[in-house]
Image 1 (spheres, protein in one colour):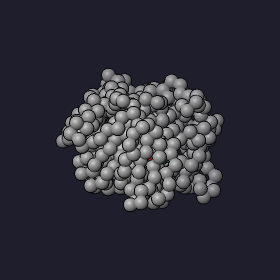
Image 2 (cartoon, rainbow, N blue to C red):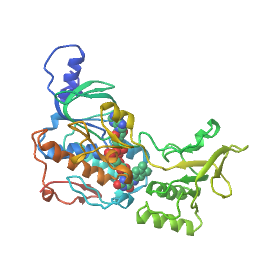
Image 3 (cartoon, rainbow, N blue to C red):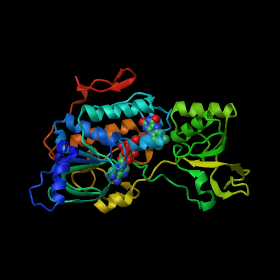
Image 4 (cartoon, helix red, strand yellow):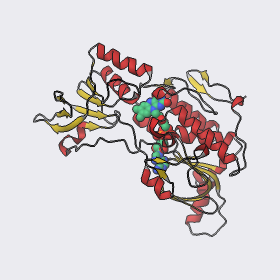
Length: 372
Ligand SMILES: Cc1cc2nc3c(=O)[nH]c(=O)nc-3n(C[C@H](O)[C@H](O)[C@H](O)COP(=O)(O)OP(=O)(O)OC[C@H]3O[C@@H](n4cnc5c(N)ncnc54)[C@H](O)[C@@H]3O)c2cc1C
């Protein structure tokens, strides 16, 4: 038995199972798919509600926890607690204040270590099916059985793409995040109207890029005050050229391998080195529908505590946030509701009362969480 198997009964059992040995599989209480803010918060709430950590497993397809944050946040990003203008009010054990990217990641590290949460990295869920006792889950590595399951895979696996034909000669100049290419001293068009779009523009200006910013409306109602004011200040100082009321019609390559952008409106075309779309993500509808979750139009139908139409199966975080979009704190809070529901008859547990929770404390720049 290797180290992982010794520490992790679920792993060793499924390994044993994979050899074809017939035995009574001791099932898990809760499998959480995705180790982002929602998934980690779900495990923390479950442990605080009295579920043994050996009965909880997080399956994460990335190399590390909070993979969307690691991948999509630029290094110097200020992580805001009231993202998209949502109230920074935490209902459960986990909570953040405004902090930087590395502090945010340390907070998640701490939550996993302190609560001894089992996370299997680089293990992608391929399929799952409801059974009489709960769910059978097949991953790239193993098979598991669990009584309840929470899906917290976010929406960034599939960034929202514009309805435009992007020809192969400019594909490398069209981006959906700003971490996969180092922009320096270039002309960049940022497309979007939310906090991410504003933050991308601010970061790119700091790195000596010349920025145009295309937004389809005439005022920024979806940004928090800091991001809106920062973007407008950059526009006043002529560091960002905001093109309001603009919808892109076409992107094409110029003879000198730049991107010519034309608009549906009567606006002059612009020529840039790169275009970045910051349009948010999309719900992985196919994956969810295959499991049997019912949808109302584009949105999954969710009951109390974000339980889906499949009993014992929950959607958390951005997946449950609907059209208004999610934030780290709303992801934390989604787990609190789910845990309350689970403890009402699905598992034997008692959700922690909110008045027993201290506000997060700042310890050497890193927030900690603890109960009274
Ligand atoms: C550029 C940008 C800036 C942002 N800034 C802020 C901010 O300042 N403040 C704020 O509050 N919010 C911010 N947000 C939003 C915030 O990051 C999200 O609301 C939050 O991360 C949602 O958490 P989640 O756990 O639902 O999903 P995610 O954070 O997306 O986590 C999902 C996890 O599931 C994993 N996963 C995906 N598919 C599978 C699978 N099939 N099997 C196993 N694992 C899987 C992913 O690798 C990932 O680790 C920002 C978002 C972006 C894109």
